Amino acid sequence: MKAIVKTRAGEGQLELKDWPEPAPAVDEIKLRIAYAGICGTDIHIIKGEWPCKPPVVLGHEFCGTVVEIGQGIRYFKPGDRVVASNPAQTCGTCSSCRAGNPFMCAQRISAGYMIDGAFAEYLCIREERCHHLPDNVSFRQAALGEPLSVAVRAVTERTTVHSGDLVLVSGPGCVGILTMLMAKLEGATVIVTGTAKDQQRLVCAKERGADVVVDISRENPLEVVRHYSHGVGADVVYECAGVAASLDMCWEAVKREGTLVPVGIYSGPINTDFNKVTMKDLRVIGSFGYVWTSWQRSIRLLSERKVNLEGLISHELPLSRFEDAFRWSQDGSAIKVVLNPAMV
Ligand SMILES: [Zn+2]
Ligand SMILES: [Zn+2]
Image 1 (cartoon, rainbow, N blue to C red):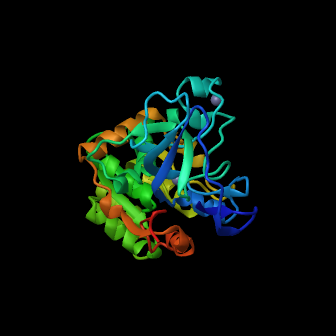
Image 2: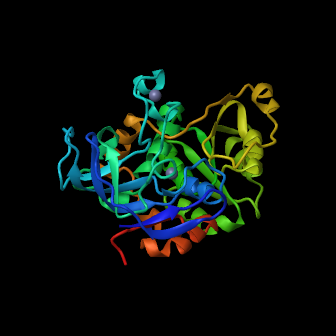
Image 3: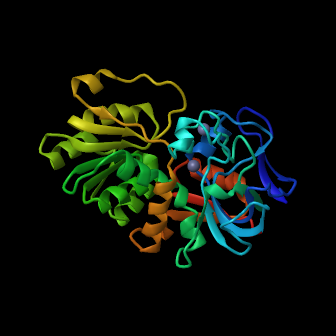
């Protein structure tokens, strides 16, 4: 089968290759990939900033149709439409696994960087990571199930946003826009900030319901926050850019005794004014990945049309155009790029 493979460690090293088609283990189902999304983690992997075990097929956000099942599979059959989450392999016995948070398992092995992922025609994944897709949720919407679950986790499970709160989302990438959508569903007023290269993403955020969008190259975001909060600051701030300058701005924007949530991932250690946590009596809450309930919520939100993700996919491309796909994902010209392995 065709697959996009990171062949060696370091920057770049990507190739479209003929790759062995996987066969399902006893507890796995084999999916024909319908869509696989490109996300910030993939960009970190391409730049060599993220641990990975080459040669490995990239891609960890995906959905598809069951084509074959392992002997121990109980809940899925060929033909089922499925959306599935990483982590692909976990120990199953540590306290995080037992508590239902496999992302925190120290033995976690994720598809798409440690073992073969979804930028390919087929992928095998453990049954326990799979969710049935309701008939009324398209594969295109399901392709965004993973980033939606990240936003659901950050906004509704890790933190509490109250109706009437002022929320700031810094970084209008896909997760940032979805975080805005979730905060809007909770009843907040939401400001989204981005840089000059984020024009298109800011327009998209505004179209999808952000109350205010700010291009920080033209307007001081702190003045906007002061204006909308009558000088107090934002109740909850989600840092979704994964950039130190963004975090610096977030420390200033959050109100005293407010909540700051780093969702974005930095490319390495950063220098920032951590005294703000103490001096402003802040709550700083990390949010990484998702748990089972985040997915159940995401799928229900899609099925009940509480969120509509169609407009977030800016490009749908075949595997052969992976270079364009990664370039556009990095330079801000795309909101979300999905790869469609059936497309030529
Ligand atoms: Zn991702
Ligand atoms: Zn574990």
